[in-house]
Each structure stands twice: as structure tokens, then as C-alpha cells.
Amino acid sequence: MNKEKVTTETIREKKNGPEQIIALTAWDYTSAQIVDTAGIDIVLVGDSLAMTIRGDENTLGITVHDMIYHTQMVSRACQRALVIADMPFMSYQLNEVQATRNAGRFLKAGGAGGVKIEGGMRMASTIEKITGAGIPVMGHIGLTPQSVHQIGGYKVQGKSLEPAKELVKDAKALQAAGVFSLVLECVPSELASFITDSIDIPTIGIGAGSGCDGQIQVTADVIGLKQGSVPKHAKKYTDLNHSFMTAVKTYAAEVTKGAFPTEANSFKSSDDLKQSLEKEDI
Ligand code: KIV
Image (cartoon, rainbow, N blue to C red; front, side, top):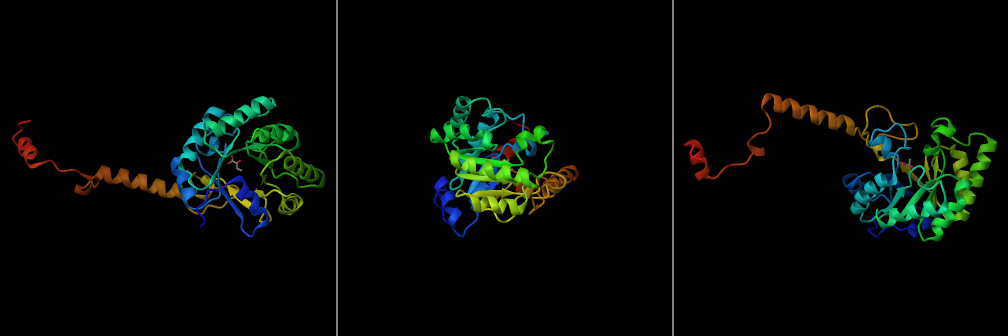
């Protein structure tokens, strides 16, 4: 594996190369260290952590302050991967000045190498301002979870002709606005391949089939961190929830029956201390 730091340029170059872009989310130092050491190209501090880590119902409640806190931990851990921070709901929608200022905070205070913004054409001029300030932006279209109330649920987008045409226009508008890559979430595979072939910047799919230039997943899903099933577009590569639960129950059972701690987990006193303790002279 190439140990050189991944940059937005490395990601752009992968558009024309044989290798896929591989991306995952992380939320703290430990998760980011594992993902980075495994050689993942992009570590996204996704606002999905509001749901997977904080237990929120959706991603709307998380703040810039919260996201910077998580971004700092992730940035500290990543030696190679490009760290991208999700800009939370209402941190970039009000106006371009607010958006650019908040985006800058993720680089200055969070240590990120760029930000991700949800939305197509309607976000293009804001994204142009942010990229104009020297801040790399990853676009995100298709299912945009921050608009869950407007979309009416977590549904596949662009399944029929007219909405699909809008997504193609969105992708082209974001490319013109200067995004260095584009997340396509929950769109039909054929449409994702068409968009990928229509633009010069790399697409990174989640629930968008294998025709994109790369893939991203929520790490909590791929490691089975939470109880229950994962979305159709994800795959559990391990069941960490089960392993965690088994370890906790075994620990509790061993403490209950006196099997833990053993001598191997304990510390010895010096001879003079032992003698004093025996004589109760302490
Ligand atoms: O917040 C997140 O984890 C994301 C990915 C699903 C792309 O935006």
C-alpha cells in the first residue's frame, strides 16, 4: 500500500486510473486509526454519527461544534487518509458567508482536508464561494439525509426519467462549482454509471451500484456495531455488537463467580509491606 498522504488531487487522478476510491466514516480517534491503518483513502466524519453514535433519530440536530469535536479526533488519527468533514444541517444553507466561515472552521479547528455538502444545483453558488476560498468540497446528491422531511423518508432517488434528469443536471452544476468528488447516495445503478461517465470528477457511491469511481459506507454498518439489520446498500463484514455483548456478559459472569481478576491481573506488594500487613502494622 502507498503510504503517501492522500490529497484531493490523488482522488481526482483516480477518476482515470484502474483503482477504486475507497472511503469509510469514522467518529473518534480509535475508529479513525483502524480505518486509516487499513489503507482507506478517504475518512469521512459523516453526520450519520448523530444516529449511529449519539442515538439521534436523524442527522438534523448535530451542530458545527459537535462535528468539529469529532473531526479533531479523526484528524489526529489519520496519517494517510484524506479527512473530510460533513457540514451539518443549517451550517451552510443560510448564506454564502456563513457557509464559507463554517467550512473554514473544519479546516482551521478540525484539521480536516475538506468538507462535504449535501444538495445539487441550489447549492452550486455557495460551493463556488467555498472552493474559491481554497476549501475543497465533496458534493453529495441523490438521497440527502438532511432533507429527509422534504424527501418524505429515506428513499431511493432518481428512479424515473424526470428526477433522473435533475440529478444529471445537479452533478454537472456541482462539477462546474468546483467539487473535487461527488457522493451519489441511493440512486439506481444505471443512473449512477451514466452520471459517472458524464462528468470528469470522481463519483463515490453508497447504494449506487458498482459503476461509480469509488464506494463509501458507514463504518458502524460494515462492522455491525449496532443491534439489528443494516440498510440494503450496506454489508456487515463482522458482528461487533455480538462480540461486544459476549465480552461484556462473560466479564460480568466471571466477576460474579470470582474468576476475574486472577493473579495474572493483580499486583504484588513488597516483602516489607506484606509483613506489615500481616502484623496489621500499617
Ligand atoms: O453522514 C454520512 O455518513 C454520509 C455518508 C453516508 C456518505 O454522508
